[in-house]
Figure 1 (cartoon, helix red, strand yellow):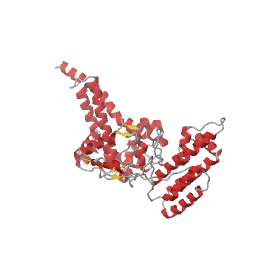
Figure 2 (cartoon, helix red, strand yellow):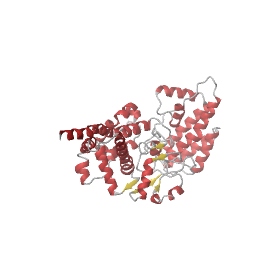
Figure 3 (cartoon, rainbow, N blue to C red):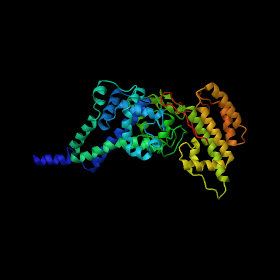
Figure 4 (cartoon, rainbow, N blue to C red):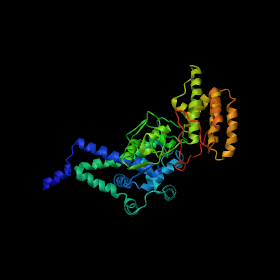
Length: 427
């Protein structure tokens, strides 16, 4: 009898080998990732997809069991993040708290934010509020991980506690740390959003598609995070599979071509969403005006003049908003020595301010003045851009026309993420 108990404590019910343990960890942690990205993020926070009630409740149970996350609290914190991304009011911005702290203490920042009653009242609306949520999942959120610890020990013996520890660290590190931290610190950007979001990798696999973070901040209301042909969103792949099984209904999706949408019967009724006018205009200005002029200046530079680093070159997209004081001085010096680029930066700052205007009547007149002034600068790239702006007459509050193939017109639904005013430093 004692030997049986000792064997049970050592190996658990499964007597699992390393391969079984790794497979168990892979399946359970991936289920947790899908719970966060599909249910908490895309469904509950942004309302871009609805799941069958049975599947939605499974996600709620799995979140309670493996993360102790309360749906309303998670949703509220994330909605506030979108409303104030990378500002002092952002619950978890690496530019405010530091990248190291966010990477290793992201869950602590989330915990601190969720205790704000005003935050829950303002941003936590529309989440589940049934009996089990009020009496089990919310007041006893820590019961889930405790139950999981007992299950782990029963299945794997005392070694199950190590497995349980990995499960407990999975979301705090990969979601709170890597996605919220690295996703606003390093990577490539398809769109010049007012925050510093970036795509960590074009293959959104390891954390369910959340790696495509800049795309998500550009279209927060879309159930699909990938927008370029070379990008892959594993979360979207799962949503499409669930749609075909009748377990998911896509509400909104960012699409490159309307024809692509009709190829999938399960998402045919989804509402296409486009890029916000400000994001589209500033993205095109950077790629069609700023970058060509910078390349010309680089080709013309004296061989004794130090080249502009890639980081400083990309900083021109947002007026150097995120640079340190020393980096800003180097960028200013480089710009001051190049009159054409100084002109480009001045017009970029003016355009950004116009796109943030809340008065459409005044914005239209100011925009035409900007177009006329840009058209006589003698800078080909800026004049061409101004000509297209004049033809389409892009003003805040009106839809952007004539999308190009590289950056398609994608409607951004209102209400999901407030675009905060760009505090654009003088360049």
